[in-house]
Image (tube, rainbow, N blue to C red; front, side, top):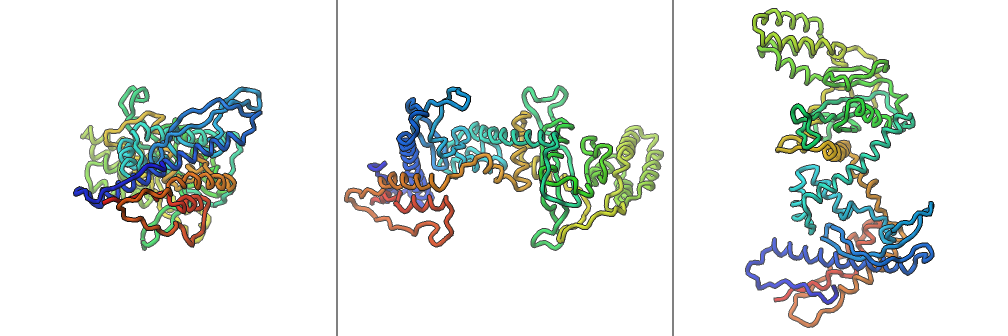
Length: 495
């Protein structure tokens, strides 16, 4: 790298600011890749010299590569033969162990995080294109897909451990609340390959949310949002999903201290509370009630009147009015069948027809700033969390691939995405390791400070060191030590 001279001609008539910006960015990334390659190989050499030679037997150097936000870095690392505690032979890379390297395949954790952020918004193909335009990384859509699958599988392991603890009664959260609100629904997604059902081509992805009440949205007089929401979703069988749903509750809350639960759903058996559960109140989702009435009642005015009665909790009057409609449309077979289905739907969910706020329940007082409101947030949650990313646009899913993406989508929805990623990557560098790395970085960066031969140049002026006068984290220390050595010092502009 030291002898390499990057030049940008100022006589190029096609040169504009955009091209200049892109070229300089590319050059800086190439320099950074060279420096990081040199750092990694020097660290590897240092580890070889300081290792326990009786424990780790050097077996040669193997070349590898890693995709980073700066580009692809190709470097060599030494492999060692050793034995585990059971006496079984194994081969390890001391460099990976030293850096606690948790790369996702051949993708750095930093780049993997950016891939996740983008893949939660758009297709894997567009994600790969975006990475190429916003970073110096060139990826295929398959690489982007692989990143999501690898991270999703790690989240699956944690999910299975959580359910296992719940089944064994070893799960008890520390947060104590008096009231818990729960809602659930499903969204039908197109499937592919062996996961496509024999009848039709869609399968239901279940989604559930838990929250502690409602609070005002900042800056809005009438807007409200749910408070402390957690979310889970997947192509699970009903009993398996219910376990996951309850495990999510038990992970966060001391379940024994919850005085009341209010469950809102469309009437599917898997959503309703199990028999024998105390202090649990089921409510049939207002949106589903209204939608079914509008679909099944032929006249809009009649549908409006029936919905008004149901919203007011006047159940007897509602069924009487619906019975009158059945009599009115007796001679119209198609309309009669629709009304009959509506009658059965409402009748099978009678226990949930009265909105919970109209039941005169003695509910505990909520904390300051949190209030009771009518439930029915699931249509919005289904749309925001799952539908916008996973439905329509000619997309289809395997059960495994859909579940992996859903785990990341739900983590983003309840605000735990970056916490989850940090736990998976776990790439913390200790203070001692940081000091060793800084020394190596300084040695590598010195190559970039070689004074170029005399030429007609516009000298590069030095800029202030980043984070000057600011609190320094370990990451910021590393960056300051890197740029203090003027790594970009061999950038020259010729005319």
